[in-house]
Amino acid sequence: MTTEVEEKTEDDVALAERLRDSTERIKSELHKLIVGQEAVIEQVLLSLMAGGNSLIVGVPGLAKTLLIHTIARVLDLKFSRIQFTPDLMPSDITGTDLIQENPETGQRHLVFTPGPIFSNIVLADEINRTPPKTQSALLEAMQEHRVTVQGKTYDLEEPFFVFATQNPIELEGTYPLPEAQLDRFMFEIVIDYLSEEDEIDVAKATTGIQKPEFSHAVVAQDIKDFQQLVRRVPVSDAVARYAVSLVRASRPGEANAPDFVTRWVSYGASTRAAQYLILGAKSRALIEGRLTVNFDDIKALAHPVLRHRILRNFHAESERVTSDQLVDRLLETVPVPASGM
Image 1 (cartoon, rainbow, N blue to C red):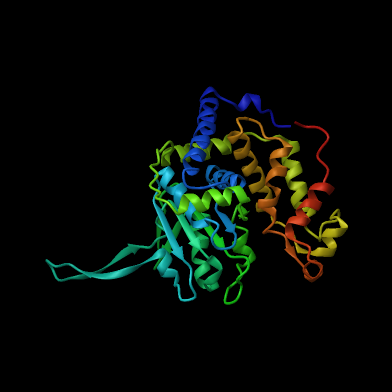
Image 2 (cartoon, one colour):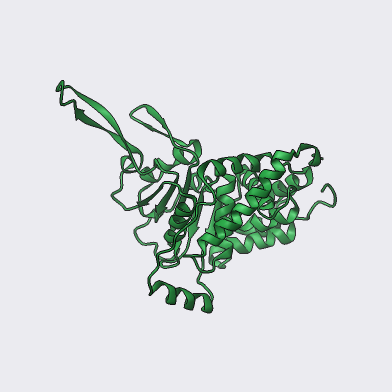
């Protein structure tokens, strides 16, 4: 079992306290414009602190774009919004080489013009409205934090995040994201309708004059420091084993897969799911003021990490079994290790 106390340093403890205070201040700033959506905000912040990219799914009008743009403003990070459309080309995302003429010599040469991907926070709006060729332009950037154009590689400025949105109800003329690309998103964050009281607050606030001033409690370097701290948080063997057990149980080909997985699942979650479960759990522990990861951290993140990685089969769709219901069953079925914390 991993010894956790020995790996903590005074500097890390102080940085962990600053991370927790910073996330509370970020939430306070966000609520100057964003009403409610506490769980959504928490998952977005967990993604930021862990250095992951996330997919946000919700019907139009639920402030998906506003939330990500506001976070960029609060953190004082460069923001780009890319509206994905059927005619969008990969070069519209990454940038391209343009011929420019030197006015003094008259010589022409190629100059790289960066695309909107060269930002700290990129919002890929309605990502499923563009063909796979253009969707794949995000893959290298999301995974490697760099892009390659005409054989030349350009590094992206850190910190770098991609938040993509999808509309779950309007599917005509869309291109479902391939599993390889879905797997690169740390979370699938589901944003739902507000409560009645929150919706009243939104209706009143947005029909008046809104000019909030944000204080930048956290800057880019802080985010990079927090991301490194998250990765230094140790995790016990028992917690890691529980995360892996949940992931392996989602695969119908596994010997110990539950019967409902064999009946309703075509393909289960990949190893990347276990990595993101543990990384997200580390981030959650720090945000809650803890330097140790527990089983509840894994359970709390099982839905956003697994829901887009479990591919349901025809039987599940015909019986209207959702991915979230499958994750619920996994949490009920997979036992928590009896020892090891």
